[in-house]
Image (cartoon, rainbow, N blue to C red; front, side):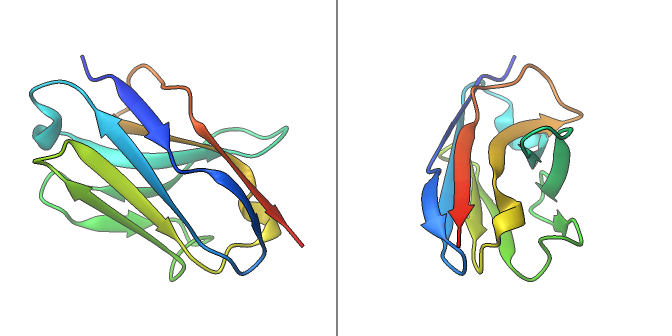
Length: 113
């Protein structure tokens, strides 16, 4: 079982940046593919970025070129660097393994004009 704690969210103006972190527990974290998901207000949760156990990233078209996912297996942590933030990036962001298991509490990202 992997337990997840997300952090780093906040309120920023459009065009700004944030870096999210997700600290995991469990001895086999390095074996999992991991992803960052988000749930905008009133919408379904969606996968925006993923990274394989070997470090290969994949991005949704909506964030490609603006977001960067990375991982540090020694620290059992996954990161999401978010640049050039847009209003539509406003959401609660969650990390989880792929396929997903139990969810953490998420971290709120609010982008304003």
